[in-house]
Image (cartoon, rainbow, N blue to C red):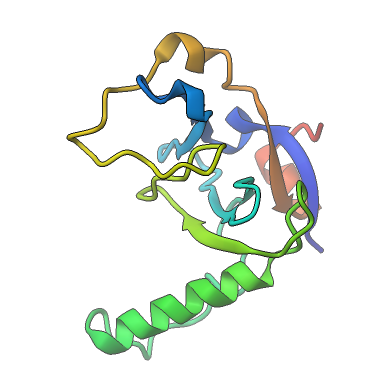
Length: 159
């Protein structure tokens, strides 16, 4: 059974970072695609906290979709519905206790900043990562929703 825990971001291949010119808005989060944790997440509409999951053990995200076309309107509708079902299947936000996730986070998603501001337009409003400020955040505590088997597989140290 899955439950909520806090873990260091680096343990689940999540990368907290500050963008140059946007530090006042707080952190954004990315994913290290080359790690076995394979993090995915959901961002809360209310407080902008991200709830992370790892691995490929989510029953909704991993359902058999072999009867769905690889592209086209049927695929788009299926994928949209699948993400909506995933977001509504998660427990209430561990920070604000609302169940109002509206953003599915994967390796191509730009999350909102901690204050809720939208990500800058890329590339015209993107000035790179503030490496100095970001280096201090690699072990920032983040919320993870998983089970003991997944924690053991990843050798997680729960905070």
